[in-house]
Length: 365
Image (cartoon, one colour):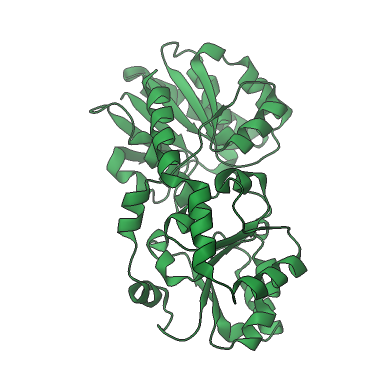
């Protein structure tokens, strides 16, 4: 193989990361052999058209080397993988984050002709052992890349190493062409067409996504506007809590927890407004997807969102009353004007051109 893409796992929780790696791998040299290796297992559909996908089917304990048995198994697993790579050493290894890097970097030390790119997707406090691992690897063969300038600066401060800013982008024309018509998108979500406005949110149902804040903040609006609805697309541990919260606030019939939807990126035309109340994000694909689709956004006032919107309005402090007031204001105003301002601030076309140039250069070195 020429390029080996190593990722933690497959499945719904990893779809966004898979999509990012797919976009990058498509910029490899024409005709170059590409393989994706999942340390665990699961569906990795977004990567299936950029090369072969295989799985090691390892447990989390074996990958992390947890306990005496886990540490022994990890040594054996690394040896087996190293024997496999010796048969056809990769020119480049693209690594999905620090957890995968911890597993695979030690065995790549002896592959002196192989370059490694570790791609960081999210904000995380690195352990001292992780920093030592990165610092101890030959710097001429290792590139650290973050999916936003905000994340790159954060990681540089933690590690004391150079971290490149490889802001992830979406090809605007192709993305817009993939969108379903509004009625079709609503039908795909199981929502009847017509009636009031559809306020959307997309992401894993985990505390850091801030969906509890959103449900609480929008409850008053929904009670006063019974034809409107909040549609949350995603799955996770917070589902039962969010359902109970909507019931407690009297808006259970207007809060729709759709679950994971394989066509979520094609459904933005169903929404009049997208809300992203995240507590933290490495980049957050929902923001650029919504803006490119022409849907206005209210999002947490995070540095990574300020970076993407370049001063455009729509960013809010993470306080329930702030979100409540913003929703009550923006939902009676001209949403198209907000969408236009955000589209101009993001400059998706220019970001895409820079994305292609950056990763084509990085992969070809």
